[in-house]
Length: 245
Image (cartoon, rainbow, N blue to C red; front, side, top):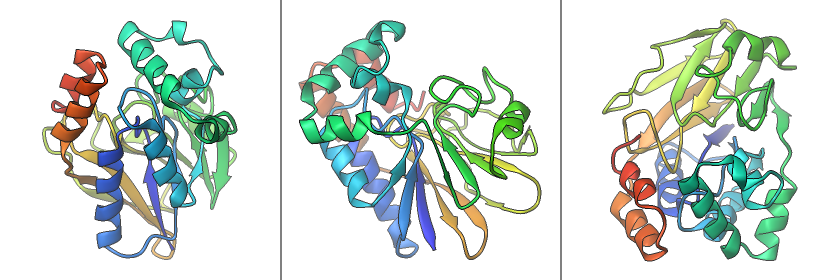
């Protein structure tokens, strides 16, 4: 079975559409896992949630999901985030809001713990930047862990980051095999990458082969930027899409 793994879509419908097309070009998808932050920042919250749900995705809550539906206070976010998330909140219909409100903070599937930040602090930990990978493994109830939040695509094996955590203008493709140590994998951000490559980041898990393939998909960034401009969203959020930071 092939499972699409995504995170930090941030209401960027064009980026999610591109990721799905790219993943399906290599074979049919049997499901999807999402590590949260489906909404926030971007211009298409309702359409993005609907597309993700059409995949039958298992999804956990991110801090922007929580802030947009009032589970946590947007006063804890910086000004640009708060403005964008308040705008996102004003666009949600009842069905989308109920879906986001019902998201759990953690899930377990096929030997993976799915969480936005880390098992230590599901909504807020930036694993590898503000929290320790070994602590995450110690706290996880499963052999392997899938995270998001940092907007950096990475593979960590037994507490060590393979290739480090560096910005790259072109994100390297790589495949991680399960079984040789414990994995923590971040598929990267679909909708607002910050690791130097503006392409939409994602991963695909092949349960038969026991592999996680980390990939990227080009999309029409300018189309998303135009939609953000039309919504009068903060300029820095618009600019950074084209810069991958």
